[in-house]
Amino acid sequence: MSNINPSRLFTASRMALTVTSMTFAIRAGMLGPLGLEFNLTDSELGWIAGMAFFGFPVATTLGGFFVDSLGMRRLMWVAFGAHLLGLVMTIFAGGFWTLFISTFLVGFANGMVEAVCNPLVASMYPNNKTVMLNKFHVWFPGGIVIGALIAAGMKYLGIGWEVQVAIIIIPTLIYGWLFWGQAFPQTERVDSGVSTAAMFKAVVTPLFLFMIFCMFLTANTELSTTQWIDKLLGNAGANPLLILALVNGLMAVGRYFGEPLIHKLSPKGVLLASSVISVLGLYLLRTTEGDMLYAAAAIFAVGVCYFWPTMLGFVSETIPESGALGLSLMGGAGMLGNWAFQTFFIGPKLDSEKISLAAAGVAPDKIELMAGQSVLSTINILPVILVVAFTALWFYMRGRK
Image 1: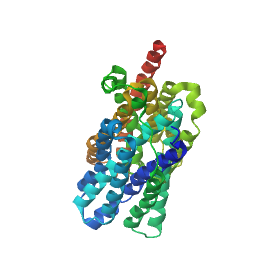
Image 2 (image 1 turned 90 degrees about the vertical axis):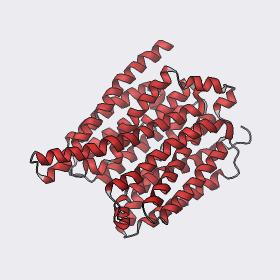
Image 3 (image 1 turned 180 degrees about the vertical axis):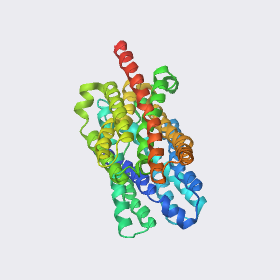
Image 4 (image 1 turned 90 degrees about the horizontal axis):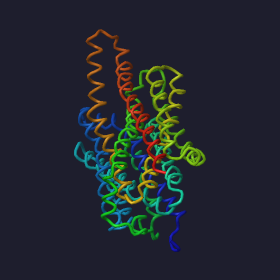
């Protein structure tokens, strides 16, 4: 690695992840204006928004299969090109189909960033993977805070959604410049001489499949709550955008300063503790109202803070033979599961709850609140399952030593 600059590559990776998260934050605030401007139904808006979550696992899966043979550098430029094309198409969109395709492209680019940068970080810091993956993933919640503040500020000033999207092009060009001319390391699997057959064997082991199952639950505990925060808590007496900013701000801080905790508890201990705190956080989110929701959101943030990067770090450290494919499949499973859960459960559940509550004669100003609390009570089941799963993982890993 004598001709490789890990510091610059790590900075470039963080900037690319910031772009990824900014697209989530800014696009979330665009749905209303897009519906009005292009006369789109809620169903059509749902399909457009869903493409960001669908394009992501498509890219992580493809990236996981080809990153070893094509190299991380080539796939990083695929991500850069898809980001630029998707953002420009969004700015000049003329209706449903251009928005549908552009959102898929942006989601695809986001997934390719994950497919490349996770194994890149793991390859550059082989002796400190979980800690460095947490520091890398600081910039997902960090970027959401940045994007949310930009969107809120521009909305306050009356600046349209096209300019908000155009702003994302600036950090996109910056990460392209940072990666320009840089040498990339080989993936850890290739560098260590692990065969392709061994890699495929590793991703069908019971432990890996168990972690895929847990990734579905951890991703939905975090993202299904935060992505629907306005619908779930919009009538609970607190500002949902402030809750979103608080949650993601605390997550960013926690991930950046999480090294002592990770070393003290180990990744499996962090996952178990996180699931317990997430149960409490979600319970408080669905049972409190008003200013107390901010305290509940802070507890929830502590719970979900370490889930995503620690899951990746655990797999990379415990099943290293899975290589970049293992990391990509984990990320893809999390986002694909999130897309399915949001599309086929949360939306329909909210609609059915509202119909039932209205039929029961519940006051109109209470229907939204009660429907949101009902959905949160179901989401609350996910970390309960994780407590059981990660307790079993704790004892299993102790028995392996």
